[in-house]
Image 1 (cartoon, helix red, strand yellow):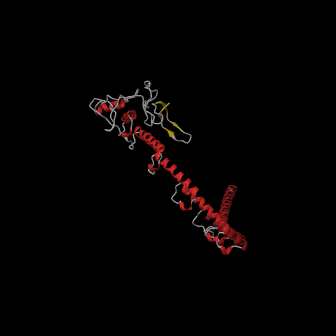
Image 2 (spheres, rainbow, N blue to C red):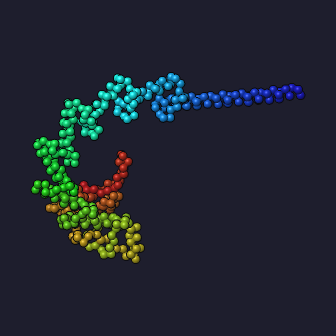
Image 3 (cartoon, helix red, strand yellow):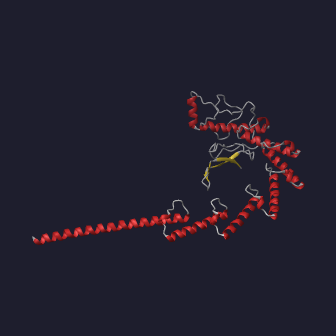
Length: 360
């Protein structure tokens, strides 16, 4: 009985000793973690002070750190002064640093004057520098005049420069007229330039009409162009109606002047929708055209003087592609029917190109 009590007593004492050891270890770890956190805080504060941050607490620095921070502040101030920053304190510079800062300021002023900047101080330039700045100003003025900029001063141009500027102005005006820009002055064009500008305008107007743009002027179209525009408008409308777009124009009267292109029919779902909406009678598509465009007989000779081409084969792909272009549409660039179907694909930059028809 006595031995059992002794064993229990020794076991209890061992457990208490182990608990005491664990408590001491926990206290040591806590003290170590607190000391590490304090060291990290002091180290971070020293970095902030050396970098000149406003969060620096100089009271936490020792004597060595204070001296290092002071040297860093002087070096930083010299860089600011040498770069012309407003935070520069000239009173903290040495004589050698002050001389270097003055030289940097003169060089910076010369660059500003030579580039025509408003921060230029002409009084700080030497006679040779003033000559250099004057030549740069004349060259810059000539470039401005030659490019048609409003900052041009024609009184500073030589006679040769005035001639070149006049030629550049005429070339620029011709480009504006040829591209249909509002800055065009037709009175300055030669007969040949006026003819070319008129041809460009007619070509541009045909493209606008063929694409259904509101800038189209139908009175400028030839008979062949008018037929082509009607065909493109009819095909666009057929596609819009097949897709159920709001821009679709339905008519109850069948069109007898221009049948759909080969292989182009409404899909079954669209036909069912029309049957439901018209009491079981499905109206045929009719080519939409404005009052100013009169219907013409269909033709495949789309270029003036071209022979009549053979009928188009049935399309191998869908009647209309993803981007709205349809089989048999006339390309405004090549003036040939679009018969080659291109499936949609993704470029290397991730841009998706919708499926479309193109001419050969």
